[in-house]
Image (cartoon, rainbow, N blue to C red):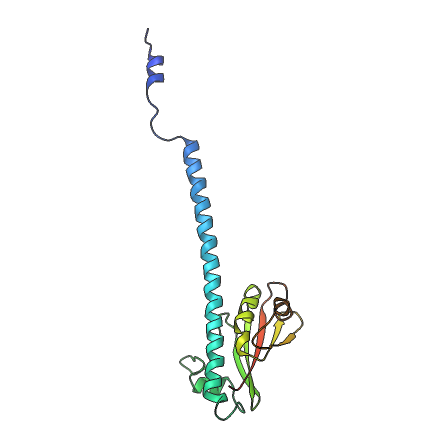
Length: 183
């Protein structure tokens, strides 16, 4: 005998259940989290590469335009701005680096100058130091609230242990003073 109860049991279930919706949302959240992490890592990598490019261009152009001719006596960020080595705003002021820190150039003697790159994020400092060490003779790193450390660069090489001396071990912002010489 067929009753209404048995007819209801024979009907196919249609639609999705709350559990299926929940599983779908969990999977979507995991995918979104993975995409967000990948985006952050890519943004960090891009910022590091942009700073490496700017630093190496400034040092290279300084060597080419100033160091190979008259030497670095009197060379500073104002002279670098006049020579279009540094970018300036509409009022003629030198633009900060991407960390919003000042870019400072100072001559130490006729044969060398120092480029100071300020407020580098602590987790990006060692990547920058390792990449730009080839064009400099020494680097001084001063972590915010820490002690300055100086490393002489030999043959453009620097070790990971030396990056810890320059960058510290935490996430505190770091100021790097990069000494470079004539060609």
